Image (cartoon, rainbow, N blue to C red; front, side, top):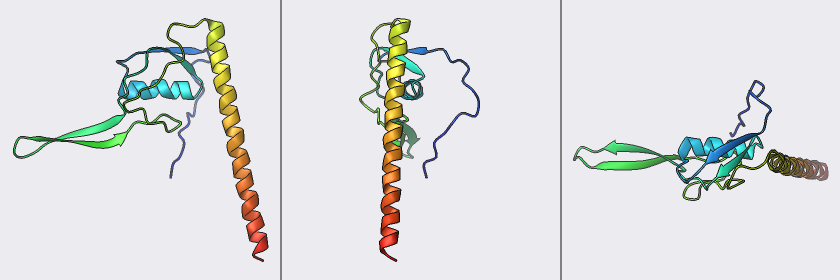
Length: 137
């Protein structure tokens, strides 16, 4: 079962953050940047990230050869697979404070819209369940 992770303390700052990224931003750094962006805590500034979305283990075999096995994938909080594609930044160069604020506000409005749609969908599903249960009586 997927259980969302949530911090149990207040953020260290409420100031808007800008995270510098480029084609060398990979793996866990890429996921952190994507999580900050997806949760409307930061704008990403720079170039598209590397796109290292696989977690791999390397095993040496008895004949001296090796085996590389993919054991996991990095996904953003929105469950977007970043492998080979990376994450697109919000801005190519450092935005003004006004531009940062506007981008983060737009993100929050989009997130609020998504939450409202999920709630409406869940409510509609519950109403259908209740109607189905009533018709079976």
